Length: 274
Image (cartoon, rainbow, N blue to C red; front, side, top):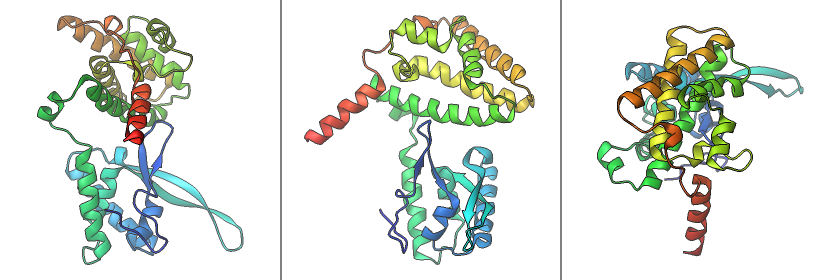
């Protein structure tokens, strides 16, 4: 489905992708597509959507991110206005809480419900995936996890994110930094190490990422030093859990022959030929 507003923009047309590859929508760009002309009225719908999110036991912060933007007025003066970065799930909740008498709202409810479901997967479905498909799925989760972790780490006082992430890698990989892991895997300069991991290794890193974020929030960490220490400790805890379970240490897991970027390029070429 491709619902449009008066400017012929669809929901996918206003989608943004951040530097981590995470998709998001701006609330003020979504507002006219859902045929709301007044921000105050639309923000009331957003507030209802937040409550629905909270009642579902899902983090509101992860799906409705407050941002401030500069807006140009008729006299060329610039003023700061409030906006939100929304996940696809947040857009779905906003549509669910909108005026269902509007045709566009009813269509949006269906659209975002279907699109959100496409990003979910059951345990049975996962077991049927090929190893490369599992890699793509877990890589997407780690990408989203890292984005959320970075937001929390920033609030915890982290400014040097390379140092922060290396603290986690050192804990999980027995002292190895991201550069050490890249060299061991034989990767080119600046090549993404997560794109060159198998599904099992990605899962270990996803656990490290999610548990670190939870710990930073739970302990209300406020300094970069403490945040790095926390990340390192969680990495060591995950490593210890793998060892006690009789699993393979992450540095001993095989590196896939092809990176996910390479597989993606090959898939795109194949589709073009077809």
